[in-house]
Length: 194
View 1 (cartoon, rainbow, N blue to C red):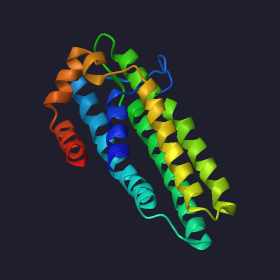
View 2 (cartoon, helix red, strand yellow):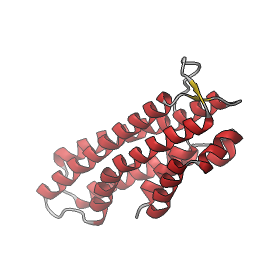
View 3 (tube, helix red, strand yellow):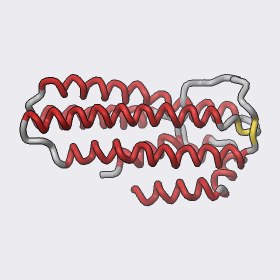
View 4 (cartoon, rainbow, N blue to C red):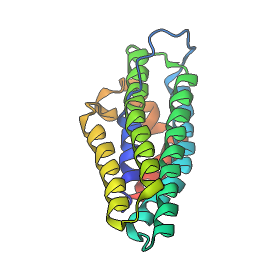
């Protein structure tokens, strides 16, 4: 059940975070931008792997008593908190990478930042919902229901995103992405997780 990681990566490569506008960011070559962003996505994948594995483990091996359930709800809340921190980090990294110096580069970068940012409230809602369960649930079904509901909300948020990297990226950025060894490494990691 690696779908959450796959969807996260697809979101990242097909996403956009809250519009940045002209923020004075440096214009950089498409090659430099693609390498920097792909390097950041590699770090992002490493960072979210632990929280996602924790959540998958919880779903596959739910607790059977009150103490286990409380511990698992706390673990799930922490996993969503860490995931949210990784989203914040990747958004900042994309902004720090500058703007691809091509026609439409700034708009593309802003959309990518916007898609990623749009998922942050869903992740925070999940964390809060799990912290509420943590305090009083004695039901295996309740804890797994909350985790599954939060995954469903996150996936629904992804489904609402109308963005496709291969279709929306400026041609020079897409070419740089396809030619970059750093991006090839990230694509390889993504493919190995499907």
